Length: 186
Image (tube, rainbow, N blue to C red; front, side, top):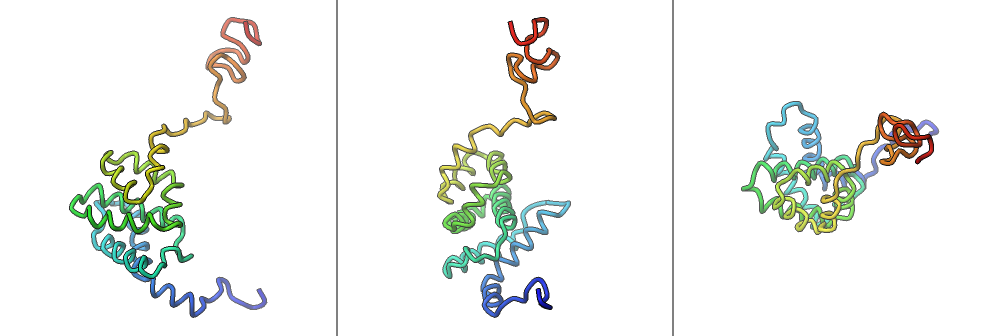
């Protein structure tokens, strides 16, 4: 690194970008703290307000695509938004506005489509709330993914037993054949 410190100092442009994104960044930090807290009594409405205002401001400036939000922060923000929707029906209009804004962002919608935690949270929502979120985020394609059952967990060793006594055999049977039959099949 030739005597330069790591991480590298932020440029003036980086500092200016972070100042313009300050409200949403602050909300994301608070969401992270909420997510890591032991007592999740409910979604913090002050944080929710910061998030919705930050999203609105950044939409106007086109800064939701700025490379300063991590996928984990984006995932946490979606999960927080879902929690507010579950607990505070009276915030429905604000949630819809925020969902429309985030769903229109390439980076934010990619996390919505790709996160297993988000998918599980959506599956656990009341169906009407889930459909509302998917419609507002323009993510109706995700509905087919949510309707599929989750992948079965593999047993130790990483292989599912074959139903007719194939390699690995059914539990209790000899490998390669049915219980009591010759190895290799009938």
